[in-house]
Image 1 (cartoon, rainbow, N blue to C red):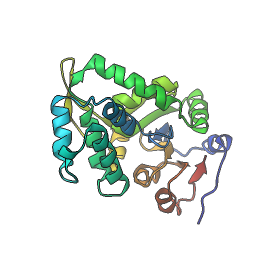
Image 2 (image 1 turned 60 degrees about the horizontal axis):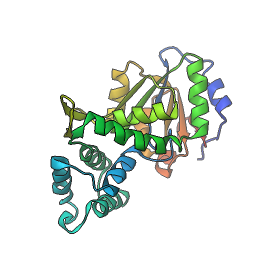
Image 3 (image 1 turned 120 degrees about the vertical axis):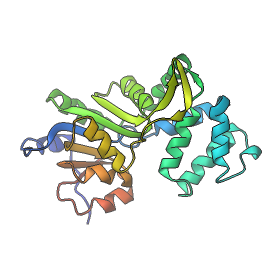
Amino acid sequence: MSLPTRSVEAVVASLDALPAGFHRAVATDADGTLWSTDVGDELFTDLAERHDFRGSARDGLRERARAWLDPDALDDLALAHALMAFYRAGTISIGDICALQAEAVGERSEDDLAQLYARVAARVAATVRPEVRALLQTLTARGFTVHVVSGSLGDAVAACMRAAELPHTTVAGATLARDGAWVQGRCVGEIPLFEGKVRALSAAGAWPAALGLGDGGWDVTFLRDVFAPVLVHPKPALLDAMAGHTRAVVIG
């Protein structure tokens, strides 16, 4: 069973008769959905190309990588490429790659982190999906709030949202520990993946949402319970998972 493709206007019109119990809110994934690239990959590659993994963050990355390869035989860039290849092949789980990439960003000052985020945000903003931009702008003009959940670093995703001038109310993602103005190379709290996305959206007070946006199979955990699930350039796994949902549509 294939899902129907709809225009932005048709998606907006479908929310005119929103049943009671749904928040006037958009719940959305970030990477692959709002933009075509991945914030975690961009951060990881930027640092690897600059050979800028630092201190205990670099040591921790290499130690964790021993589960899949010999990190001592690779420089930073080759190691980053190898780990992402293992992830694409299914050897490394999405949870593990998100944690690896997030923690590798640490061991730097807040000022250094802001410069890194600015470089990456400029690249990410150039890949924003125009149909998603139009949808978010139209809905926020009608009073909807926008809540982003991502396995990438939440403050990096927020920086990308600002650079792209995309409306957003809350952003939840991986979080690095801080010691004053020093960013540590370890995550604190939950990285919102799978059911964690629903927990993050509930914590934001926006659940269940009127509209959901996602692109990958892991987004089914929250898309199945919104009023209007919208699949953005969806991967086959998401199409299969949402095939039986009577209100699911595709844009892009």
